[in-house]
Length: 130
Image (cartoon, rainbow, N blue to C red; front, side, top):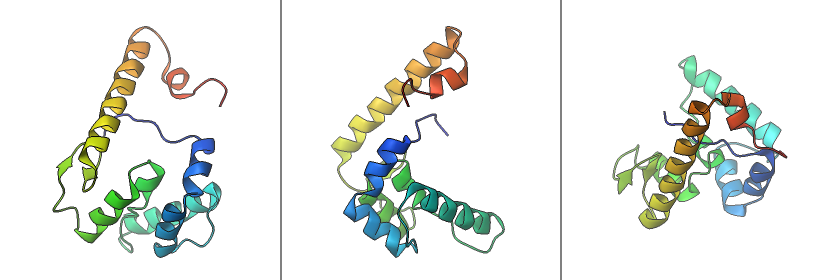
């Protein structure tokens, strides 16, 4: 999978404050909406998936900042009927998705250039001040 950033704690807190995302996570079985609780739930669900006793927790997509409508429709249509694919399968707002994909591509290229120039991966991955 291509490199792209996992949201910071601050951006995750803002994301989890979004009513639409909270409603979606509630429909996925979550009852607490702080980052630690969500991550523990994802760990439990992913462990069950790996053991063959659960489904893949597609709600992970909202933590990766995929649009919640796209995550919902990915589940609804079992990964089919999408408009196009990039970092995720796009079902809505293709122009907005293309812009985000371009930003991800630029960030990946910038990170690769920093590594080529001698930075260590952890130096590239950790933003100053966070």
